[in-house]
Image 1 (cartoon, rainbow, N blue to C red):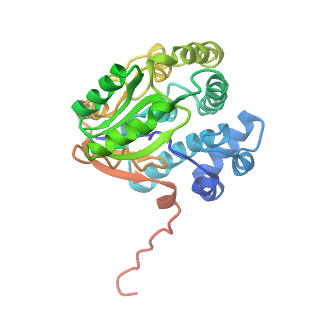
Image 2: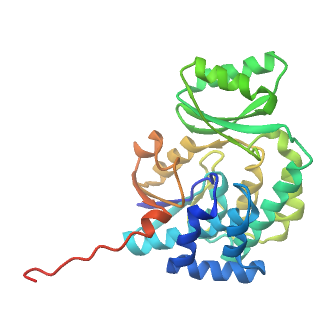
Length: 310
């Protein structure tokens, strides 16, 4: 049994996706549909955008993920019987599972990007989310407790693997966290701005509910869709709505999603999108055969097989 996994979004620039969006036939068709829904040329805006998580970068990432899923189904015979999408990947997963139309997914992605920008321009301007590896969960929890004892604040925002985590904290404490990670033999990876997945962002959850997600109708998924907060199967449209909103305030637990996919009988996962994380971590590779569907792979020339004796 196959499942489609749409990855979380990392820093994304036009150089990463532009060629794929402009040349791949699946992507070109979806970009045209996105242009119509948005009322502006996505590729042009993306090419001119600054920053790693602009509205245009986020919509382009969303479009690329769904185009790559189509490509994987056509080229690699992927037959998805379930969908999952950690963090940003919830949005394309909701579309591919049939809960939301592609056009509404484009609008949702663009409007949520604006919503985040507006919220973090005013609220929690000093908070970041930092990722690091090679530190076991018990030690991560000790770091969170130690920071609380120092009068600071932090939360574990992402459980990615047995020794790979993301922690949200105030930027003034970031140097302390990085030094602590090094002292434990860990490796700091990336600091995300804007931050995500922390209970203190309840105001963002309310803003998104009122200004964006409340404007949409969500259907019951046609494919099993797993929530990235706990790996449970989302049963109806209300559940999809809650999953998207809870992503702002609840941590991502990727090992729980892996466990949920295993319980469904999934043996092969296709990670559809620019991914350097979820398809590579040990909890994924030890549980499934992994098929990567990335822009780079999709743009490689197709191999031609010669007939015998010719």
